[in-house]
Length: 313
Image: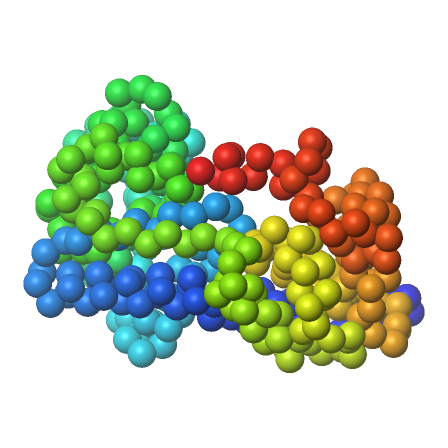
């Protein structure tokens, strides 16, 4: 039997929720907004904005897990409804997305107007006991430069008026442009959390080092230390301070060790994992885990993080 066919217990850091300072702050705000809505019976909104790869979607999943473990929903009910906003949002296709998420058999009915779908959504949200609606990829409401997108945003405001539910917009940094352009929506989404990547500051550097230490403790294989100054710098430059890239490199490293029966994670394994998961054409001097690495950020032309902060804004 080959190594690929061996029965191994799969390991992934994605099976573990690592509470970073960013995640802790966002979770606390989400708890507060949800709690305020339950107490007052008035719909409130929260915006969670930040670049791709920081863990926004993972944060929502963890909130659902925690809430439903302490507040189990009744059979056939659900407390949190997560929906991805269509890339070209309109009132009708956004309504269709919500109905589909609630498994409405008539979600795709073309004969139903946006107004008819709206009424069905209000009824279903109530009958299912939904307390929080999460609308992911909220930047689509800003990116789609047509009146339809503005109407879709206005439609969200109307839905908040008709329900006693907390609404959470999750998206890239430019999501805040939606609030700037719509005063009534801005009043309803007055709470905003900036969920950013780790940056090169004294505080963030210490937090990133702590994150690496926690990850190291979770590893099911032997490994070199992640905690010395040089390794912290290597990991930071390899991930650009984004948890998603960090997880990809570490998960791949664990897989390589396990399926080769290697002694443990070392620079060679990490270097290969980086090429497998982040940048396949990285030269030795541009691979953060290679001994020849020049320790400059991977933000040059055609490098993994070229213009990343501009694109993610």
